[in-house]
Length: 238
Image 1 (cartoon, rainbow, N blue to C red):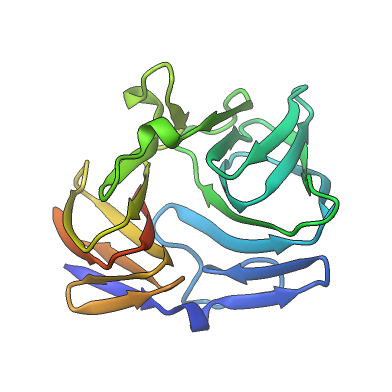
Image 2 (tube, rainbow, N blue to C red; image 1 turned 45 degrees about the vertical axis):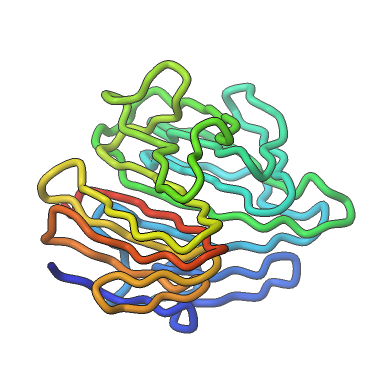
């Protein structure tokens, strides 16, 4: 097993007034040559957006973009004709493919919006752009890691998917739990982020917003403390 620890305090930060951001990997004005990406996971931004503010219309191409609101709702509008609000308890997926323009704005005029913005390199270039969002409550089992986004080839009709052999898992733990995660494919790695609480993997104690990248293994065992929430992303390493 190989691993790399990313304590929360080592993330890149930015404060634009309307946006307070934490960058797990190099992004915008934050650049660290040792933190460009983890496998095909390119971006994991932990953003807080002021009321009624956000990202105006801008383009993307050839990127799988997953947005997970933590508090509040994000108002989405894109060049494909999609428009609506994605709230906490939902996940948004957008395949930029051959090109798309979109805007993402805090839907509340009075409360901040907190969300994770995640980008993954696609396995196919210039696919037809697509958009989807779904509530995930029915997918989550207490005190377990539950798959919420899968590769296109493995997803059922009601499930969220992306154009990459990547798996997004969320876990909400209300009691102390030992859980094992088995990787789906050889050559994959895991990026584990503690959303809140505490978890231990291979003697590494992770607290809120700490992350651990792990590869060259078939499975990991995670000791999760009561009242913790985890995000685990499995991706190809090359």
